[in-house]
Length: 293
Image (cartoon, rainbow, N blue to C red; front, top):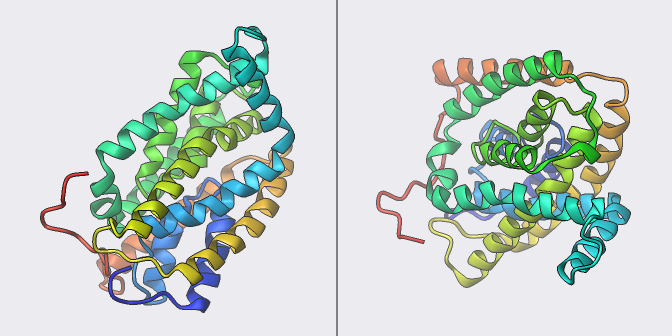
């Protein structure tokens, strides 16, 4: 995080923010970026975001532990030629297929993700634009399909939607849920697959960023490990509560409140940037000649 060490209070606030916003379709990376700028803190950075997401994904692993165990065991059995027609084994393959776009695009555009795309003007614009797309999808989607109806083309569609979340402000859950609604899936089915699909990508990104930080390969960024670990633990606890609440809410509620919130936040950010209250690039470390990765 540049030359300035993260404080414990900062870690607590950012951990709560990460846990609250990771699973709601409002973009956790955007909120981490905005909260840091609002408090005058240095941009927590892509590495901090990725590592704290390990905490929220641990919440997914705990909440869906029975489903995940069933999918993993069926998928492993399918490798040996057994249970090939098992729907859980099929789900395992679909999660792998759906994870490919974000892995490939994340590696190709890693430097832009960690620097240029964290500009508050980009964050605000994506908050507003993808709020409108989510609203449209929620209005026109048939909401009849369940996860048993998932196909390979649909899995790839979810995957490319998830890859859009590499841009702060899009929202990983928001992007995949939006795609699910357009494809005719119910709100809860789209959310469940969104959570499961995120596991490989988020854990892979988080552990990769942690490895780079430990080996000193993160350019322009150092990790304050104590506060970062605290933020990750807090994100886990808060995220677990949010998952349970969101799935209950989607049984009866729409995404309209999240759409309104995104538009309001995006508009406020643009106004604050245009009036000079907030610096759109803040303390983002931009390397003029990034080393190849």
